[in-house]
Length: 131
Image 1 (spheres, rainbow, N blue to C red):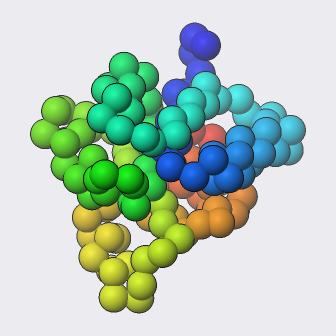
Image 2 (image 1 turned 60 degrees about the vertical axis):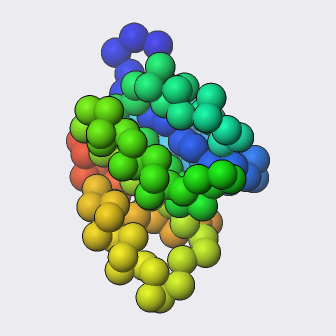
Protein backbone atom coordinates (compact mmCIF):
# COMPACT_ATOMS: atom_id res chain seq x y z
CA UNK A 1 0.00 0.00 0.00
CA UNK A 2 1.53 3.22 -1.19
CA UNK A 3 2.55 5.91 1.24
CA UNK A 4 2.30 3.78 4.36
CA UNK A 5 5.28 2.83 6.49
CA UNK A 6 6.16 -0.77 5.76
CA UNK A 7 6.60 -2.91 8.86
CA UNK A 8 7.80 -6.50 8.86
CA UNK A 9 7.34 -8.93 11.73
CA UNK A 10 9.36 -12.15 11.72
CA UNK A 11 8.70 -14.97 14.15
CA UNK A 12 8.55 -18.74 13.98
CA UNK A 13 5.57 -18.91 16.36
CA UNK A 14 2.16 -18.28 14.81
CA UNK A 15 0.79 -17.06 18.18
CA UNK A 16 3.33 -14.23 18.32
CA UNK A 17 2.40 -13.12 14.82
CA UNK A 18 -1.27 -13.08 15.85
CA UNK A 19 -0.45 -10.90 18.88
CA UNK A 20 1.28 -8.41 16.57
CA UNK A 21 -1.70 -8.42 14.19
CA UNK A 22 -4.04 -7.61 17.07
CA UNK A 23 -1.73 -4.88 18.38
CA UNK A 24 -1.58 -3.15 15.01
CA UNK A 25 -5.39 -3.38 14.71
CA UNK A 26 -5.68 -1.73 18.14
CA UNK A 27 -3.22 0.99 17.17
CA UNK A 28 -5.27 1.67 14.07
CA UNK A 29 -8.49 1.98 16.07
CA UNK A 30 -7.15 3.86 19.10
CA UNK A 31 -4.65 6.18 17.43
CA UNK A 32 -5.96 6.32 13.87
CA UNK A 33 -2.64 5.19 12.40
CA UNK A 34 -2.26 2.81 9.51
CA UNK A 35 0.74 0.78 8.47
CA UNK A 36 1.58 -1.66 5.71
CA UNK A 37 2.24 -4.58 8.08
CA UNK A 38 3.78 -7.76 6.70
CA UNK A 39 4.32 -11.04 8.52
CA UNK A 40 6.77 -13.86 7.87
CA UNK A 41 6.54 -17.10 9.78
CA UNK A 42 10.22 -18.07 9.69
CA UNK A 43 10.80 -21.51 8.28
CA UNK A 44 13.99 -21.54 6.24
CA UNK A 45 16.33 -19.72 3.90
CA UNK A 46 13.44 -18.54 1.74
CA UNK A 47 12.30 -16.44 4.70
CA UNK A 48 15.54 -14.42 4.43
CA UNK A 49 15.06 -13.59 0.76
CA UNK A 50 11.52 -12.43 1.57
CA UNK A 51 12.94 -9.81 3.95
CA UNK A 52 14.98 -8.39 1.08
CA UNK A 53 11.96 -8.48 -1.27
CA UNK A 54 9.68 -6.73 1.22
CA UNK A 55 12.38 -4.18 2.17
CA UNK A 56 10.58 -2.87 5.27
CA UNK A 57 11.05 0.53 6.91
CA UNK A 58 11.38 -1.26 10.26
CA UNK A 59 11.83 -4.93 11.10
CA UNK A 60 10.77 -6.76 14.27
CA UNK A 61 12.94 -9.87 14.39
CA UNK A 62 12.67 -12.83 16.73
CA UNK A 63 16.03 -13.82 18.22
CA UNK A 64 15.41 -17.57 18.38
CA UNK A 65 14.61 -18.94 14.93
CA UNK A 66 14.74 -22.50 13.57
CA UNK A 67 18.03 -23.20 11.83
CA UNK A 68 19.50 -19.78 12.63
CA UNK A 69 19.26 -16.87 15.05
CA UNK A 70 18.12 -13.28 14.86
CA UNK A 71 21.73 -12.31 15.57
CA UNK A 72 22.90 -14.10 12.40
CA UNK A 73 20.01 -12.68 10.37
CA UNK A 74 20.85 -9.15 11.57
CA UNK A 75 24.51 -9.61 10.62
CA UNK A 76 23.56 -10.83 7.13
CA UNK A 77 21.13 -7.95 6.65
CA UNK A 78 23.75 -5.38 7.63
CA UNK A 79 26.33 -7.09 5.37
CA UNK A 80 23.78 -6.91 2.54
CA UNK A 81 23.34 -3.16 3.08
CA UNK A 82 20.03 -3.15 4.97
CA UNK A 83 20.33 -0.07 7.20
CA UNK A 84 16.82 0.37 8.58
CA UNK A 85 15.92 -0.26 12.25
CA UNK A 86 15.88 -3.89 13.36
CA UNK A 87 14.13 -4.47 16.67
CA UNK A 88 14.85 -7.76 18.42
CA UNK A 89 12.06 -9.61 20.16
CA UNK A 90 12.63 -12.29 22.74
CA UNK A 91 10.77 -14.27 25.32
CA UNK A 92 13.61 -16.55 26.38
CA UNK A 93 16.59 -14.29 27.07
CA UNK A 94 18.19 -14.74 30.47
CA UNK A 95 19.39 -11.82 32.58
CA UNK A 96 22.91 -12.61 31.34
CA UNK A 97 21.88 -12.68 27.68
CA UNK A 98 19.76 -9.52 27.71
CA UNK A 99 22.65 -7.01 27.91
CA UNK A 100 24.44 -8.88 25.12
CA UNK A 101 21.37 -8.77 22.89
CA UNK A 102 20.78 -5.11 23.75
CA UNK A 103 24.27 -4.23 22.54
CA UNK A 104 23.92 -6.30 19.35
CA UNK A 105 20.42 -4.97 18.58
CA UNK A 106 21.21 -1.31 19.21
CA UNK A 107 17.98 -0.20 17.46
CA UNK A 108 15.92 -1.82 20.22
CA UNK A 109 14.90 -4.98 21.98
CA UNK A 110 11.44 -5.87 23.22
CA UNK A 111 10.30 -8.72 25.40
CA UNK A 112 7.39 -10.96 24.50
CA UNK A 113 4.54 -10.88 25.08
CA UNK A 114 4.71 -7.47 23.47
CA UNK A 115 2.71 -4.72 25.15
CA UNK A 116 0.96 -1.94 23.27
CA UNK A 117 2.85 0.82 25.14
CA UNK A 118 6.21 -0.71 24.21
CA UNK A 119 5.23 -1.00 20.56
CA UNK A 120 4.05 2.63 20.56
CA UNK A 121 7.35 3.69 22.16
CA UNK A 122 9.39 1.97 19.41
CA UNK A 123 7.20 3.26 16.57
CA UNK A 124 7.36 6.80 18.02
CA UNK A 125 11.14 6.61 18.46
CA UNK A 126 11.52 6.03 14.71
CA UNK A 127 8.84 8.60 13.79
CA UNK A 128 6.34 6.04 12.48
CA UNK A 129 3.70 7.54 14.76
CA UNK A 130 3.36 10.36 17.25
CA UNK A 131 1.37 10.04 20.43
